Length: 79
Image (cartoon, rainbow, N blue to C red; front, side, top):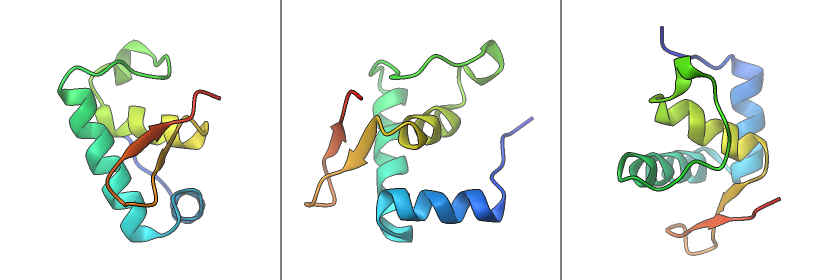
């Protein structure tokens, strides 16, 4: 089963990322990093082990990643 976000949660993610475009770019770039073998910054249950979008969203929610001002670089904040 794929994970889904409800509308209020999605609106909160827009705020965390700085808008819809920045959220989309951040998640797309982070998912590509994860698929390419970069380590996860959060522990997830076995059911989400290969759900890279879920992992990237969890990293964002916990303040562990953000998009740099150049709209390209992902910064790992390490909170």
